[in-house]
Length: 505
Length: 98
Image (tube, rainbow over all chains, first blue to last red):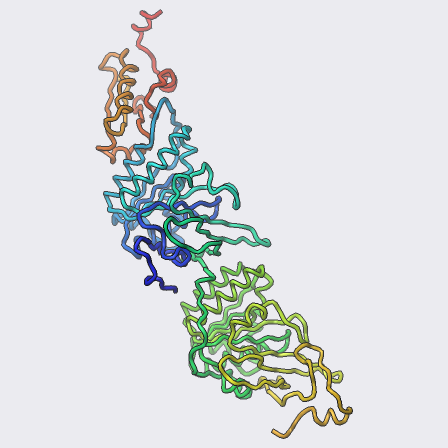
């Protein structure tokens, strides 16, 4: 997604891991060893394995995998589910395993020794297949195989020297005991000091959140702080917030809402590459607006992806039918794809990744998300913000016209967290509100923002019937509708009623 | 044959030479035909090192009699080696020493 080829310093080696090049400003330092430290289950082995896999498949870099904990066959089997066929590479002499996993038979130490055996095997393997990448996973397990720690420290240092002489870019992994404490067990970072990367898997409000942090990167700049990442069927994806560039609306091409009256209010429809937020209370007409938008998209033969987080597929289908839109037929025609998920089903990083994958596979021209605010339930404010920014910037990059909805907690008036986070990055905001006037609930609609265009700034009354949404005349002489406390202004009762709906047109 | 040993060393270094010397000392009680020792320099034959999962050098492997045993280090702790391998000195030596 992000192309940084132009920015690469000559001494950076891209890993091929999604998002890593961005946070590391190009990749690992070429010809050096990076330490990847993390607690058990933080994804170290996968990170290291993916580094080799991407190296072979994307950069034609042969690789040596020194495995100290798991047997090679276990590693091969573990990544099978990702569709990575490592034994094929072994057969093609692109990958070579050095198995130094602990042996069942006990070993006796009787006198002085060093790790020349291991070093000779690494040298031999690298030369044999002309490897450019080496992984040692995990270096710390040497400490459970051998008792002479002073010797081990010296030998680990010697290994990094040998790797440097061989000119390979290497990753060593190391265990951490706690998420926020010393960098690694046994202080291995003291020997492998050029690059230190930390992987974390922390519990945040009952949800596991994976993060990656580049602690140091010798001789170069990198992004500081922790970045969320996910592990999915396609491996590791790092989601750097700062990588998301905000591309402002740049086209003047307009598309229709699917509702002529609404198009008119918005100037003459929506900009093709814009993100629109529709905010309203429950039952306020948001899903109807989504349905019309989807139907319009299909009418003009543009593929549309409908992400539903508040209603089941059946409910959505039934509602659409009641407005004369046949979702099933549109899905069969391949114009529409409806995906229903409970927000609780996974963390926001996974939702975001899933959405990106769906967009990449289905290639829609328009996207509907009903509602974005449902995600508030499952995320911390910070995660939610990352989700919203990540999603909007992605759809903008793809030039997908997107309609997001946000449910306001109060029936009339009110705002929500979603709006606070999303409103500045959307091109248009439409508010749907209940308006209580003289003991009667009426519906109001207004456009409060329409970037790059003139729009109707009045609050219109609207009604919903079996044909859809109908926009009526603006409310007159009523104030504070948006705030949820409408008050009529001045004049006598009769006068007020007479003036409320201005029929001049 | 009473014992078969393989000794893996890394290059012609002092550590390698010491180990060979220590091993000879351990086996000098045995009549030469009862003991077979091969010394493998892993810097010259890294394939052998991989085959036998050699990590640390020097490593002594007793391949016969079973079970196979691995001892790492320069064998300077001789008592430990004798204990671990359960080495038995030949009868005639026992007679002399007791």
